[in-house]
Image 1 (cartoon, one colour):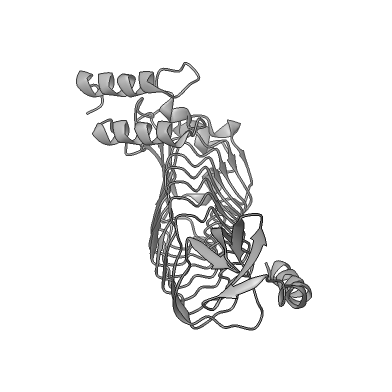
Image 2: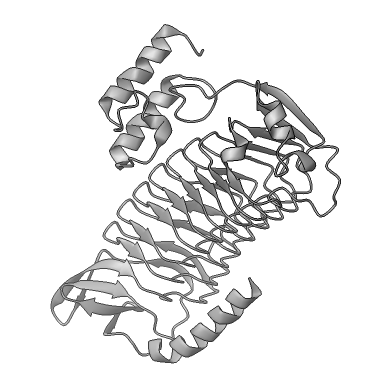
Length: 364
């Protein structure tokens, strides 16, 4: 991480002089670059934005009107006096480090038009307490909210399929996070050093939990891992000092690619930890060196995954109907749990299958 930080600083030192004068025009204190009939809010190197800034959907210069479609890389970099920003529905992308180190920024709403958020876009916005991510965003990039120490909670929309490396690293105020069942990959260090995070339910769409994903989440007490997980990387839950209960719905843990230190605790005292596993699988976990040394007890008290349980709450009800409709509307075809009828596609037939399960009363 330190090497990455040093590299980032060096990169900024190289780029900033070149970026400082790289703008085409300025209107009402906001600087822009032109690309055809579109405009990008750009970095100017001189102007420290302060207070509330409203980015317009269109801007006119020399008699020509341009549609503002993006916020460029470093556009508001290190504007520590910026407190809020309004982004118009014309914007489709937020560039790399666009609001990096805007320590006074307290809130931002990302409109439904935005489909791309660049790496480090809001990193080290330490005053940021509230973020609304639109349901058009499919990928939360590397370090997007890294170092946002004031961030308390965040809801990730059903459109997101991947949480990038270090995305929420060092969000020490984060107490809760909702990971939707559209997510299939949780990146390296994604929630590392989120020391206030107390519980995490990983949805039954996730296949990979990356290196150090929850490393040093010292307040984490409870974790639920679904049967969809096929890979748990190095130090995924390293130094989770408060971990008491882990619920693993993985039916065959020996088939999971994982590090021997995925659950390593620096205190080396695992007597207070309980691993809850599916009925009939206890002996498999006890024979697997990746699991058994790191839990004082392994108990068989979980029932198998529930067919039609799209949102991972261990039941089937109207919430699952809504969840599968959202998946269909978002165009996400990677959610295995949503393919209820097993035909390889996610469509109205799966909605009907969930409704049939609800009406049968089999899982309620």
